[in-house]
Length: 148
Image (cartoon, rainbow, N blue to C red; front, side, top):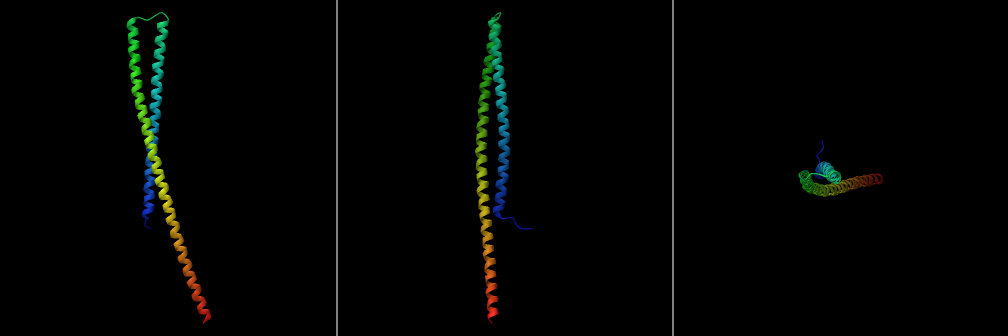
């Protein structure tokens, strides 16, 4: 069993880190999409409630107590929607941060992979030169033996 080179180990660690970052980014994106969908549903519900109030008030009229209740409920929905909008914005910011982390990890892995490839190529070239040197020495000795 051959020993794993330090560069190979670094590449493996960078790849695992990239995989972890990718999974985290996926989870954050999914949560963000869910939060956006929930916010959309909340705003749609708020809009429907407002339309319902307008149509009731325009129709047969609405008692003052019921009007106050509608307005209070709509205001509370508005507050909830605003707070949830802040939550969605925080989710989007977390996704952007995770995306930046993912890009950094990908760049690091690419850089390490490039360095590893260059090191392997340099080792192969060194080996090739050593082989050529041995072949040249062998040929030289063979030629010298033929001359004698």
